[in-house]
Length: 442
Image (cartoon, rainbow, N blue to C red; front, side):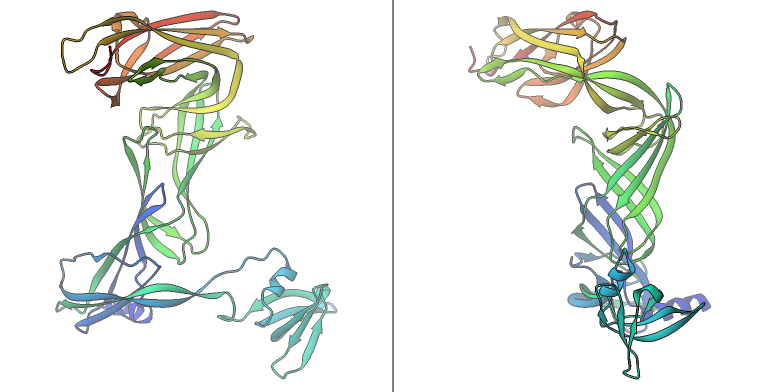
């Protein structure tokens, strides 16, 4: 019971519902919940929340039944800390404020109280003491400054007052309100340190934007879409402490993962259009990458990557896309002009479809020419999406993986080759697939 009355006393002194949960999308859209135990000694209860976004609803609780409620605009006077890099800059931002200044007198310090009236170009301070006496303090003798509480660095912020009437015999109960808002997007950053030629240590942090209030216990759900936007990944960070007016850095994961240094090429789908049917060609270069295998239990979020060597010295800075558990992520390092790729496709035959609602079936033959002009062996991973049905017996050693989207009546597949090229080697990869054209095509 003593704990309950302590809680009630705190709530009477601070009728502000703190943040308790954020469901935070990487686009910046946020679903928030604010809640606290508040006194219910009267049938009508009034609580406040900070923020421009009006609550959408009050979350139901099993302890009581809401009879009626309404929201009305409110205003908060909050402290906003000011950052100053130098003593002179700090003094200039506090002209007109009451301060205590410690200054040197011989080998000792003394402290004087007053209001800053003026700051000279050299940083000397003209201080008006409580007796209205003016005192000049040279900048070279000033050692420390303390400001009076609530005199500077405060600003008005919009908020909401929530008035509700509940049917309950309890002296206190939990009130929770929720709504939607927009914030700066959260982001992830990674440090990848290579500990051996095949193993790397990955440390991931989450960066949240500045909030207007301290939150001692915040439950955070982070959401991020995959590269193909067909799946959304979620990370749960319970019981986080968030400080106001700071960019908060939260630890997410640390793991040792296997990696491979290789070259990677992402080729385009050469079917430019189905009606009229058109193909194209492509020429480009492979990109040196680190292939990272996520052997952990949770997905790795997309974000920037700082790559360090075994001594902790920087090697490169790059980006990593979302990598699910048991999935493979690629960290681009640099373009490698010495590995050239040329891709061509052409129609080999055309057949009338048995379905009168469909157009003809076209067989496409593709050829990929690869040349390694470097002086080193190159392990190469090549990925190419196609529109149509692959002819399995004419794919060589390529692996065909279905993609979730379709293009007209045709499925989509991803072809992938993995090969090792000797210095100076030239390799040609052939493949074939069928696609259906619209009924109007001839």
